[in-house]
Amino acid sequence: MKPCITSEYATLKKVLVHTPGPEHNQLIPWEGDHHLMGTMPRVYSELQRDHEDLKSFISAEIGPENVLELGTLLEEIFENADGRRRAQILKDTLHNISDKYIDDLQARGIRLENYESKKLVKDLICGYPRKLRLNNGRLPNVIIPPKREMMWVRDSAATTPCGVMICSMASPRRLPEPTLVRSVFKYHPMFDQDTIFFDMVDFHRQLDEDETWSGLDTPVLVEGGNVLILSEEAIAIGVGKHDFLYSNRTTRAAFELIVQKLFEADTTQKLQRVYLVNVPDLNGFIHLDTVFNMVGPKSAIAMPYIFGYPDPIVEESASRVLQRFVGYLRKSMGGNQTDLSHIPSRGVFDHAGKVEVYDRDYIKKVGHVTRLPQPSRYFIDQLVQDGLLDLNNITWIGGPMENYVSPYEHLKVALFDQHNMAGNIFTVKPFRAVTYHRNTRTVQALEDKIKSLSPDAHLELMSSNEIRTDNGGPHCLTMPLLRE
Image 1 (cartoon, one colour):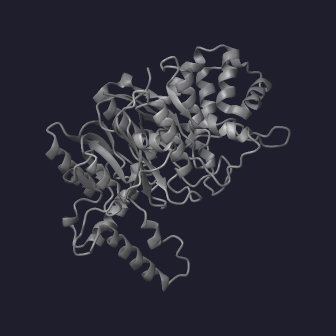
Image 2: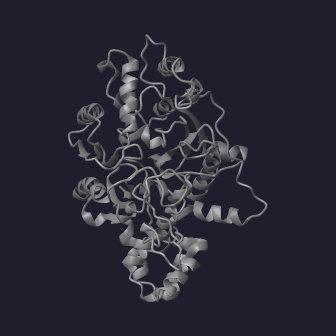
Image 3: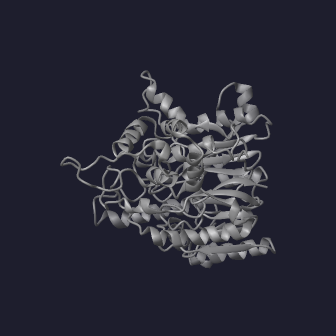
């Protein structure tokens, strides 16, 4: 099987997930760079209850045998490998720490070929060692870091019409996550040898070994939540304005490289356009899929005012609403405090929602990756022009503007719901999707819209009591492998 999808909404056939587990016990709730430190303590048994809502819905729609667990696939890889093969896979997965891990197992009297696959995979996900015991008067160093954010499996890789792209993470503590997903696609017999068309893990390892290259000025980062498959002819990738901020976790250098790799890998030449979508450099706007998602043909859920819509008319324009709102906040706060670093400036929204179009034929004509020389327009306008979206089929996060006394009140509610991942939905069939239960205004608006568009529409509400919604939603928790 070679994973391939040509939209975010066609009928789902197979999906990859990772149910959160004991890796969440590996946390000291302090701010810091150590692998055991972090600011998001979670009870994994409660996380599993939330996650079970998601899996139950998807299983009922496509069958439980088609909901694949990352940990189970990893176990199957090692179960069918002898000691030598296991060492090779670990070397490729753990890279320069594999020898230290294997040596430590041997020091404990554990032979790699006899080590239970379940325990080995637990080491890879939960971290090794997990117990802080004294050894010769000192505590052990963490050899394999715990992967507490592995449940956001979408970030590690992206399924496209050309196969799978292995991503590279912006956060140093998350760098090992794509290596596990990469090993599943490389070594599990379920997947074809040409499954991976672009391997960012291998790309960065080659750069690290190249002493003539310095990555200080050209960060090459991409996370799967920024990659949306619109059709077999078009893909959208969210990119931040400032590479040094990494706030939305994908950089322009990575985008241009991905465009090249996509067009090279698409031997059928059906893929015609890749859109670069400017996402605001704000903490809550971590990926494109937090502000925009497709729910069916020509139908989407989107953050209002970011993409030039809805037009409030009396306020001049949607972008003007953003500018006035930010100005109001900064003016109100400025008299009481001097630190305005947490309040966005007007400039943050100068490029928000704008699109650049990278067209296959034009790139072939000029001989290098570059955008179409056309006037700057909003992403939504471009999708409407290209026949991929109907303005009447958009659900706004926060609900319709006419439900509010002013666009500013609408924006305030929309920002709240967006931070709670109201737009981060996962669609299993056209107009059948799952979302968090807590965003009541957005939920009602989306439910009304999809039911007006399809008699088979359904919006499943999953609990989000322990899953902290400022990190991701159902779209982030799932990686589709096959759709119709």
